[in-house]
Image 1 (cartoon, helix red, strand yellow):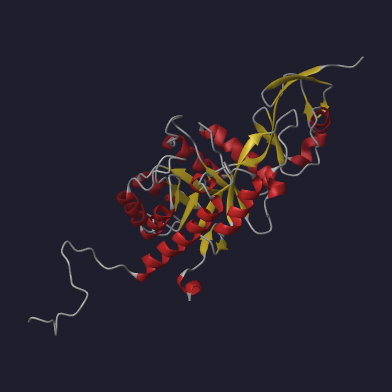
Image 2 (spheres, rainbow over the protein chains, first blue to last red):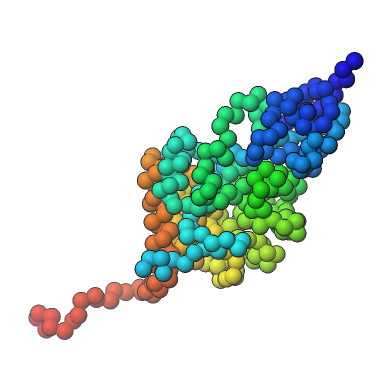
Length: 71
Length: 263
């Protein structure tokens, strides 16, 4: 039976299959190899090299950010 | 000759020939932004850090657009209202872009976008302790600027007028005093520039550089305005180092009086 892990990502509630941060990012439609993005989990930066070993837990809040136009 | 009179600007251990820092927002289209960037001669551009659209509809990344071999990125914390949010944004920017540079901007009021000095000072201190090079956007308050310089900011960046207002330098006296109080820290006038004369005046008052965005991006002809800003900044810097004449209340004839007819 597949488990459902509800999380909040970029301010939106989503259901994921859980697992590692890399897997969840992929499931949410992000390319984890894409340059210029960074992820915070529950308000703390998770360095890219730790994405494959970081387990996403129920209720986690993820922020996936990138550079945009700015002044 | 111009090169000799315009020494490079040193920021966080790096040297730049241009003293214009350009924002990347609000241009009519990406090509105009790139053309304006060329015309401005800017070697440092600001970008914001934002959540990526989950639908994937955010389109082309600004990183793919910018000539990264030629310009340094200065990510900002624009829109943050607390030291905590600004610090997290800075840490994410460093992780995403591989730079320790951060334009620290903590907003205290939605309508004026005036900075929250208390949170700015707190965030600057924590970020410097965390090895960031902090470019601190702040009020034109000399004491705050001195505190930011004293804690080791890479640059202190008082506003000329509210962000995006184009109202020019509203308090040239303070800007002069700030220059005198922090002679050894790079001083960049950030925000409020409306047209070329504002940028020239900023340099004449003693600034080391000017950061602007809207004045170019929303000009009727952004590329032309970008060039105007470049020339104005160079002119202002040259004028300052040339040593201007003192102001007088009364006239002083330029032509000699000797040999004047009727005498």
